[in-house]
Length: 203
Image (cartoon, rainbow, N blue to C red; front, side):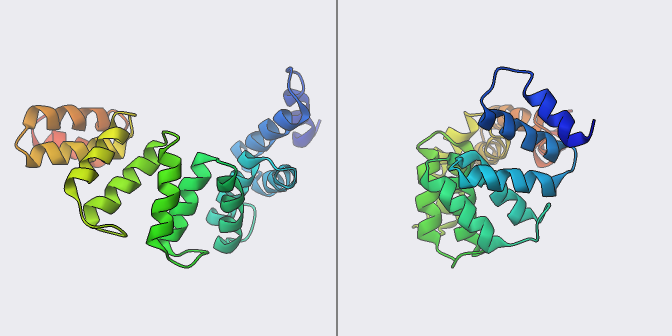
């Protein structure tokens, strides 16, 4: 039995629709390094309107796995999925607008898509909004608003925001809270958070 036949056999042993089984097969192919075959499946599913497939095909184009790296095509796929309300695609499309890869750099559009994803509870989007307020990118610098967004993401267990909250609490001389946030972040293998703990003699 070939790898592909094995994937199909494994997928169809459960009670799934053809589309669900094909999604599972595509993930299996990616897990085994068969990115080109996965890209073909994601493309087929995407043509049928599957937002998850469009998002994953966008990732492959952005990273150059199984296909030639192409930010323009990545942006096209992310946009299709984002317009269907797929939060992770909204974040990735926001990232492309932020960096100017595949689309014209547009901080307002980056914020727009981050907000759409944040409205669905996506912690990465929340963190990115916090970063834009902290740095004054596309919006007026607003530390209070930045903290509000970092806190929302941190409470959703997003390690990078937990680290940011640790830094914020440390700056406010609240060491107990800072250590608490650094511990939570370090528990997810965030190296800089662990370094902050180490500098305080905490393992």
